[in-house]
Image (cartoon, rainbow, N blue to C red; front, side, top):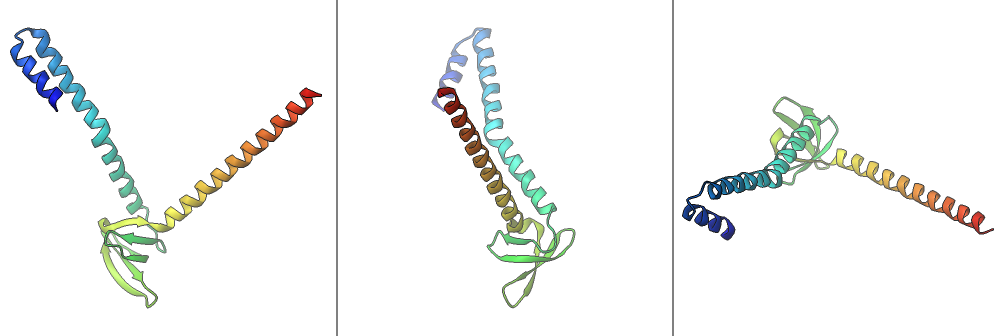
Amino acid sequence: MDLILMMAQSAATTSSKGGTTSYIIMMVVLVGVMYFLMIRPQKKRQKEEQEMRASLEIGDEIVTIGGIVGRVVTIRENDLIIETGSDRNKMKIERWAINTNKTKMEQHQKEVDAAREAAKEKKAKKSKNKEVIDETKEK
């Protein structure tokens, strides 16, 4: 913040065209950096949340922003009905109140774990092949 104030003060005291131009360029760069560090990631998160809410299916287990866990029973345009608890209470909630789709998260976690395991196996196989090649070179 002090840097911006010093630049503004130097731009105000400098009557040359170069000082004002460099100040404008610095402000444009600052706005660009703010966009890429703050605004763009937030929009990306919002888009992912909208996609998650749009891809809900009957039978998915969800968590609301209030912490209520339930299974989707009925899907409508702006709201849905979920079953909670062992006594199967039904609740109507708005789509925007959905925080997490636990079913999709579990599937995604299984895919990630499988990919990691495959990568470990590939790495182990590659290192084993390298050891065999090294042994044949030594002989």
